[in-house]
Amino acid sequence: MRIKMRRKGGGQLITKHTSIQYINPTDVDGRDMYELVKSSTLDSNSPYCYIMMSKFFKKTCIVAKAKETLAGFVTGFVQPDRQDTVFVWQIGVDQRYRKQGIATKMLKALIESEGCQHVSYIEATVTPSNYASKSLFTGFAEKMNTNYTVHRCFPKEWFPDDSHEQELLYRIGPIKK
Image (cartoon, rainbow, N blue to C red; front, side, top):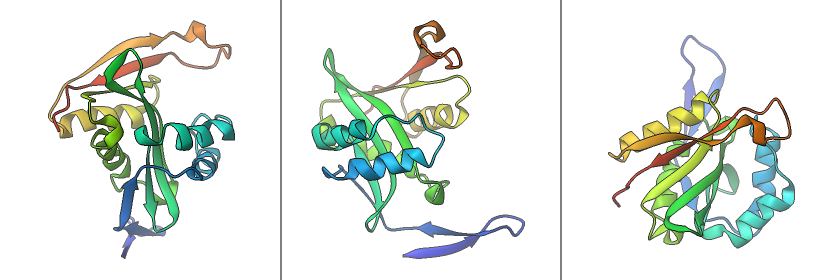
């Protein structure tokens, strides 16, 4: 079902999609994940990386699909030395589907998925200038009625590209399911 909406003050016509599925990716979803990243401001990795995530880490990844169209994705993995923690490596929402709470719904679907049945914490790294991700993760902690902490994780000096900011580690939990 689609609901037509107008932005405040006129503006262009946007469509709100109300029938989005939140599921584990299939082996072939990596290609669409890569294409979504290429058309966004997210850090792009190789196509192989997204294909690998959708094949070998599918139980700790979620895709949001409007029919057959990829509306968003979250990639993650359970940390080998901390089985109670899923690390969210990347999260993206197609610009046509933003402002609908899809990222939050994908995080909730991830934490409730079979691959995260023993998970009580979500971790993700965020640069200081990434206000959207900071808002997403702190808002998710609030919606889940739990705590979050922020710590330095990857200092700027560790990156070969001098323009990369440091990465701060957001730890959310414990999450009650």
